[in-house]
Image (cartoon, rainbow, N blue to C red; front, side):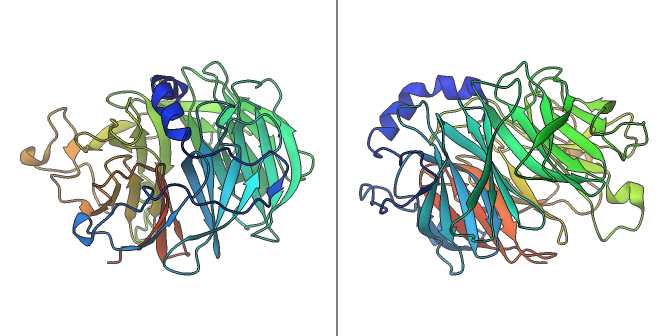
Length: 421
């Protein structure tokens, strides 16, 4: 969520948070007993509202809005989002997800003057967790050997960031080395590439400059796909793009423009059922975030970019939900399903296997590209009514997802049965 949207919602935020109580003091692991909020905070669904099977919903019973979700094993972790340091979102909720209904078991308070913990990522080996902080401009890196009691390894002040802090942070490996790719909330700052191979001593080793405002990044096979807002998606060689780039000296390969601008997040799909390397990895999925009102409305489409010719990307398809907008998403690549958070539009599951750029005239969107809905690509939906406001989705299980989790800003954490073929 960009800073501009947050500012436009400030009055609503303050009013909503005033009834939620104060978050715990920033002293590491918070041991304060969980206190139930008002009885009006309930999971808002009936079985008629979804074709994606709901298993359960856990209520975030204290503090401000729920933001991003990360899942590993028996635990899920959700960040918290607030408007200021007065009603702070300075902690992470820890959930037991072994049963159908997520159970809030603890809260992890982040040290420092933290207003929001907007992003969270877990390393591919499950050993580390990183939390980005806004206002403070730090990365909190934890060891997950005790998943219910993560141990703080370092609170890293990212050089040159400062206030208003870091909005997104993602673990990614490049040539076997573990990095964190961190994007500042400030429009002027780009991506800080941070070597965390020694997690107690992180160090910035490279930068990707912003052409407009970098919101997020997706890293795979030595390439970084940077959501650079109205500059589109920047595709950078950081060690695997064949242009001589590296993490210390990234090289721009190309830019992919999207209809509507506001490139917010990216996923580069690798289809394991396709043998051709070019065809297997031909599609980028790009989320577009426009304005909205938390709990009420949002806007922005999901775009499909064909990068078969990586030097000349082109948009081939679009998915639109009237009255709602795309936010973060996750893929069950083994099954070819994309799970997208659409804020007040709930969770949308799209079948993205096969040719997404070939469609009939009747299946084209009025703006030009193929329309995934008209192509029959919408596989399932959930939480399209009742006041849910979905920030992010993530699955558990590999290579086939066994469950899907969605963070609901207004209520907490949902668990769904994964869609199968």
